Length: 477
Image (cartoon, rainbow, N blue to C red; front, side):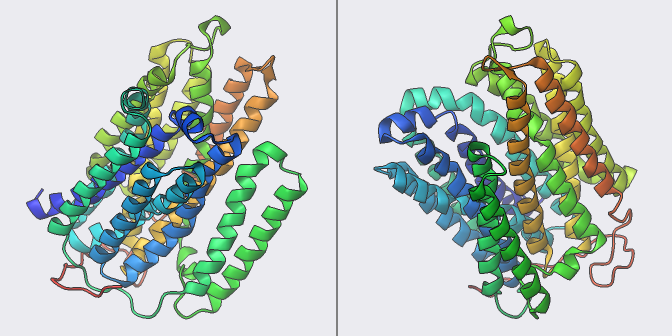
């Protein structure tokens, strides 16, 4: 890979990696945060809820800004805002300031769709596909590595250094981006649809609040239903506004096309199906070995068991481009989706030995990385350049919403099978099988996507996506 391509990919991938690592390490550090800041369980929950809401709101907005302005400028501004959130979190004297810092830091997720547009505009198609793969693979690796590092780091340095070390990595990535990432031409004209952004933000906020509070107050509680109704009204009004706006934040007509709709559905299905891995597996691993199905693992060993997920995803992601040329992109999309379901189903039938856990997790890591990378490559190839980052943002929001739905569903399934405070083995098996079944939705979505690359402007078959050349200067915000 040419030096310029290495820098364009390396800087945002490093940034994504360090913040994904922080998010994973933060959960095991909650007891320390609770003791030091005298935080209540409800306040601790808002550390994650605030970041979840801000990322859901900011991701499509950042994607649209990246479509409209110089992506280098958007990249550096996003890095600065996210780094400021990490600094505030690390210095927070109380839990309210920490929650605010995490809400600011949550905008980092907008880096994901931004990289899709950046790679498309500045790299050759093969390099762009490799970059998309590294983004997904490194994020998976950081998630697994965070569980291993959280305990030793917090024990040796305290939880605040999780933020300070992340900030150091972010500053290195920002300096690297300042030197290596070129300016890009303005891909879209017009203005930012702030009205659409406000309505979308309100709708997603109410939806996320409804999902996160349903586990404590119930799905049919008046408060939960009121949040869901409010979300439906806000998102319905947003849909009307977007369809009537000449320059919408999210082009819903474009999003209804086969490629954008299929990839978005795949993102939601992957997020939804992941609850078997995110919710059930760590809980099962932590149960005493005397149960006959638990392994008595602490946080460190849970991270070790999950580590193959990241390794497999990181290794296979850069190979998705060559696999697509060899097998065809629909076959690769179906393969990734099928592996996700296969890995989860394997855990349902074989989970009594460590090697069986490792095999199931590895298969899921391969499938998730292949499917998501191939999906992003479809967006980069088929969606017009002035909308690629925005559509990618919608895909990641759909994945986040699907993951939140799945987490609540998984928690309910395990709670229903709990006896004397311990989930029965049958409840874990049912959760894995349900997760695998939901993963098959991604297989169906893959068949919606055209098997051949489509012309981004006219919808005609094309041999390869068009790569735009970077320019020395670009529009700024």
